[in-house]
Length: 140
Image (cartoon, rainbow, N blue to C red; front, top):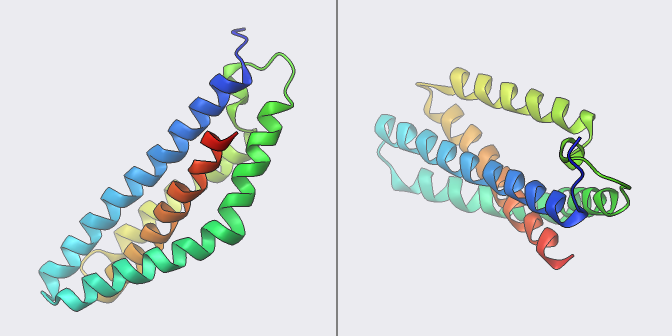
């Protein structure tokens, strides 16, 4: 097995963290674009963006920053870490479930302006929280 340093594991973790943030940002842009094509009112787009960012800041402060800290501490405490230990198994299961759920929510929302706005707010909030909490990986 390939033994790696905690710093390499943290670099991989933050790359995954930010990849999620970027994917969700693009996904929410697509959802907002579809919502705008149904009802071309900029007020809904602006409201979704502001709401998503504000909700994301709350999620960052109370959930994601603590999660990032726990993951960083766990990585730093690993002895002879392998690349597969970047996250715990339960995280991969949770991530898979969230990707599946997000995909299904987007599928259900398709064609429905209100649901498209709601799902985009959820995605923007998670993207914002991931982005802000990812900063912790650089501070350590």
